[in-house]
Length: 170
Ligand SMILES: Cc1cc2nc3c(=O)[nH]c(=O)nc-3n(C[C@H](O)[C@H](O)[C@H](O)COP(=O)(O)O)c2cc1C
Image (tube, rainbow, N blue to C red; front, side, top):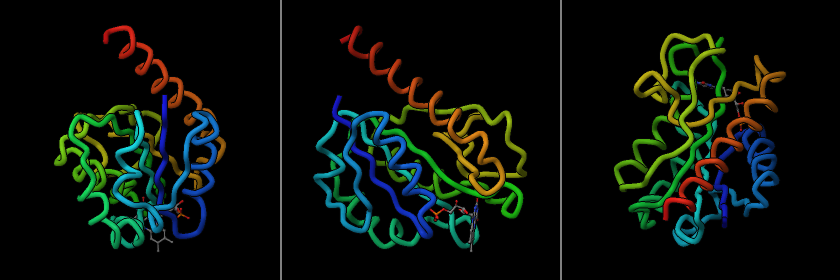
């Protein structure tokens, strides 16, 4: 399975996580500031990562490169999302940017995989919660760094299991 991970980061936290996820999949790691539309297309599983900045905003590099994502042909593409945030300081906008990316790729017809439960987190509201689940992997390295490795391991296992099922079905 060819996996590409495209991420945007302010201070490097999302890069660290993206690097960890890439090594689990032996995937290709690309920063959004240098990605082009074909990078989004040329893989079996596309993983997109962003931190939430400002007050519930996309990481700025993602924001300024949204046109590249919009130009990509994502219809039917399997996409998984991860987002970094801070549930204590930003309890009203926790990992909102992951929800914003979700809206973008869903609008383009992508098949989003890798939703996760909200148990174990403590926040008031998040654009990344749909049908009572996060649309992807939510990480809070500011307040729950000890949970991070286990959350990544279990999410990666979930994505790999889904891929096996998909291969068996097709
Ligand atoms: C100025 C500022 C604004 C932030 N706004 C939010 C926010 O609205 N929601 C949230 O969940 N996290 C917010 N965060 C937390 C970051 O998303 C978090 O620290 C993340 O790990 C940063 O990752 P990065 O270094 O890859 O950008 C904010 C952090 C800063 C410094």
